[in-house]
Length: 139
Image 1 (cartoon, rainbow, N blue to C red):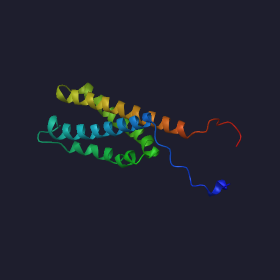
Image 2 (image 1 turned 90 degrees about the vertical axis):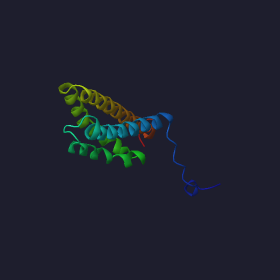
Image 3 (image 1 turned 135 degrees about the vertical axis):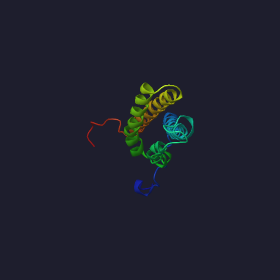
Image 4 (image 1 turned 30 degrees about the vertical axis):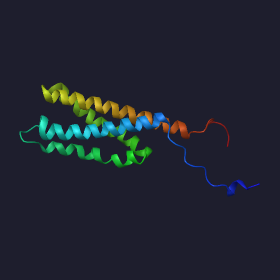
């Protein structure tokens, strides 16, 4: 018989389909926000003709991308808070502007809601998968 301490470590568990889907939705929504923000402020409906420095607002959205791609749970947590800044901007601009800019703002709001839902569900699924069956049971 082998000593249990001598056995090789168990391979890391593969993520469930739900975890993969929430990750895909989070990455897709984040990329959508980046593309929308750049297109909006540079070509589609910039605040100033010819483009706007407001396009720089997408820079903070590039920071969580490596963490999402590396499955870092902490990144999903803080991104679910950061996204509310972009949601707020979208709501303000959707209700105060008109035409194409208002439509783009509603698109931003939808992407923000999708990103938040994906991050929240991803965190919940991952914590549930790693949590003990009976957390109140003595060790």
